[in-house]
Image (cartoon, rainbow, N blue to C red; front, top):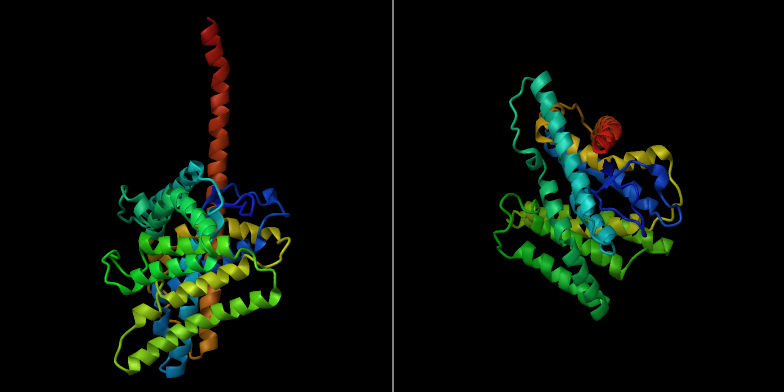
Length: 375
């Protein structure tokens, strides 16, 4: 059980949804292979962002003011990853019927990864762990499952809005909703802004409305223009932060955070670009890497496992140039992705073997039961 391997127009799964890791089951006529690439890229962005923040990679930078500014732009380019995941889920599910099986398989995946990590912590690291908080390891999971449970009602409302209103009216309505959460002093964000089901709902709505009102972009020039905008918006966010700082306004958390309109716009532009890439096939290894991407997230971001390899581990990088800094971060992100992907694949194969064993045992008892019934 892992991320969806059947994400397509006709048979889509959510960005964090379950699958059977069966890359051969894709329908090449309807499957959007650009989303497979998007899942890999988005997860690498998440890992890179965690290296910068949890790993304290920023502490390794020299005293050059320009290097620090470029590194800040580099960080901003990765901020859209979380918004991108939920917007993609909205894009995929807005036209799909609700299936409870998605949630049950995903819950088993989350539970099993948390359980295995706790066993490793106890046996190999003699670390005290809580056995009652399996589903509290990931804030994203808690937001995600809430959104999926609400998705049938949300989708009906969006589809009704799309059929009754003009496209522009829907964008205006969603923009007002996002602005109300971004600007007004609502106390709905108990921790840091953006880390809540409220903002994830906004991302879902924007992603779903993008599917309904825009869909797939056929024009190549338009696609690349949108992607260029996606790359420029985070740099603009950093520029706004510096500009406001010059006049005495500290707006770092407003312009350079998950809930920033510029970062959300960046995520939507990436989504429109990748869902419109005219790719008809991908190598099997890339498809497999996409299938395990959500498992990679659950493993690498687990608060217990993160202490072993990530927290404060990158503060001692000896980098004097921005290029060296970028190469180090991306190399580390790729290595972490590959290691977690292998672990997720092993977990999947073990659970698959366990399922077959239980099925065989169940079948072996059936003849005995029939004999008892006959007697």
